[in-house]
Image (tube, rainbow, N blue to C red):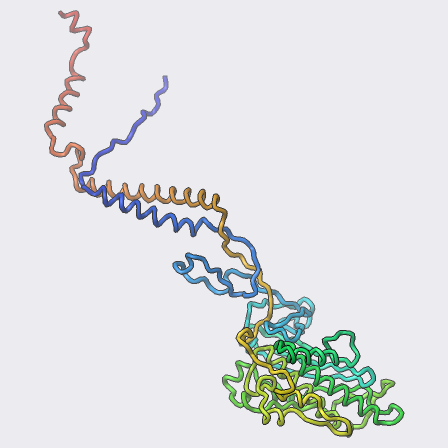
Length: 448
């Protein structure tokens, strides 16, 4: 018959230290600590969500006790690709990504960049241009914005403001002026609407002035279409460059009136048939109206970027700054500016930067984030109970091992339970000896 290992059990021994009240008190405290700890560790599950803030960090009841997580550790960057459109959190103009600087595919449709909520304080207007059609009474004012690499977002994006005298949309041209008057009466002009009002009046001034010149020349020989750009000069950045970050080191650009030189020598003048008009003297007649439009566009883009420096004509409408920046009339008859009176706070909308406009600006985007969400009550009860029991049993076993080790060191090795009773141990050993040395019972009976 095969032999199997004997079944054994652990002999328990009393510890002769009166520490039971303290031990059970510590056990209760351990349970009281383990329950909220396990609630924080197992009572929540990670779920996907979206947030307009890349640095979003959830705020739970246990956050004050946990290490502060690194910003951006919960959300994924928003990938911007060439051609993508976006707005800032100020939502004045719409922009389109043109170039990712430093990329091997700068202008390719495959070029992209991860946007991580970087502020636009290193960005400013890099180039501007205007195009006007005197026959259709339309104008387009364009601006390109560049961001330097100091904030890790080296890109170029563009925007434009289109205006037409005849448009079905009541929010443009004359309809905008009408709505603007209603807004003045009801005092509900928003920041974006107020800025759009200035842009619309500047654009209207521009195509009206170009149209007047076109009509004043006989037989349609005047320029029907003009196109002109701002002159950036020969330096890396144009003369008007003054980003928020740059203004901290260059104090002059904070207070100097923004000067936008026009490349009048390169102005394109086309007649009604598309032929080039080579009359350089005509270019000077358009300079004031074009300059007004570009000044307002520069101020609008800067405001959208969170650039509220003292020389922004939409924020600081002092008479000295306005007179030095905006022309009140243009060369020729019937060419007084409708834009200039608008800067009078009694007639035009006041662009007030309120607390709701956060500066410097960021690109308005939705980021995919993974955050902890509390489980249902039943799931929390099961998860916390299992985790608490598991940790407590493990801790209790470790505690008993340590206590047993200390007890063995403090008591005799032979028999911790019978310390001081050597005679009893000797009698037990004698009985065991007699049991194994005495003859069998049957043999004793035969001898008798």
